Length: 168
Image 1 (tube, rainbow, N blue to C red):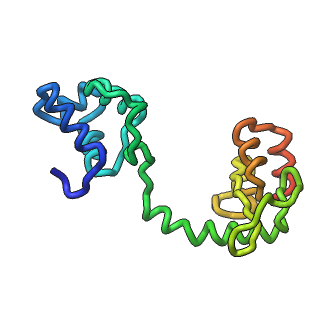
Image 2 (cartoon, helix red, strand yellow):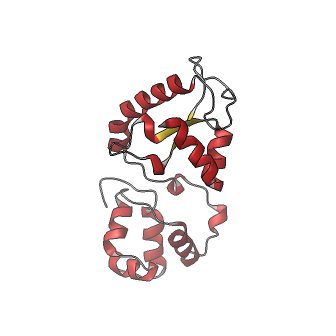
Image 3 (cartoon, rainbow, N blue to C red):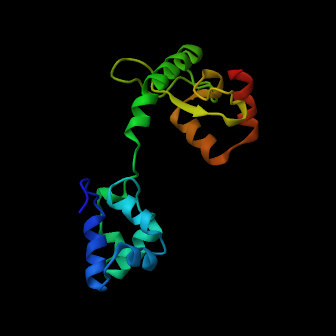
């Protein structure tokens, strides 16, 4: 067994036992994955897709809908998160200063404040305005949660153009 314990290990091992599979390579073939992918899942470096998880649960005779577990949470690269944290804080402060706590799309005040009293602002990455350094204020808009979701879902070209005009 590996030093890191993935929540998938038990289910992978159960599947091997139930189907009399001797190796992770054979299990990987059954699941339509590579042995190295299964190894990465076992040590927690990767997660299984929903489709692969459904295959695994079906092989065990389990209903995936009845099984709620942290294993369905995405793997996060903590080092990357720690490295970017200062840049994100700096970016958030710059956008708050630029927007004055007003959504740059609907032009209403942000809907609520954080415990420190600052307006809750979502940072929306506007790809068309991207400069070489991704984490610059000129690549982002300060949006309220509603406008951010609307922009992500609808990808309205007029809204994007309007934001690009404002943030440049």
